Image (tube, rainbow, N blue to C red):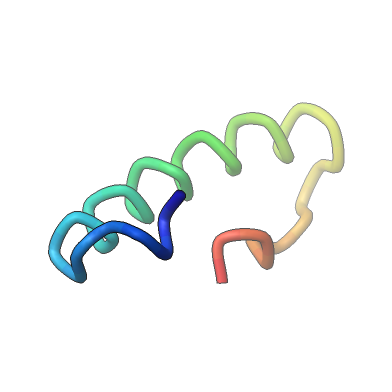
Amino acid sequence: KVARLPHKDRSEVLKILKKEVRKRSGRNMGDAPVEVVK
């Protein structure tokens, strides 16, 4: 879905995704790096 969005929207979505991923990975995997967003 992210790839289809314009660059500006992508940057905003990525910021949100990073926050969500940090919350989820923080609970599940501890100090796991956010590689999924890349």
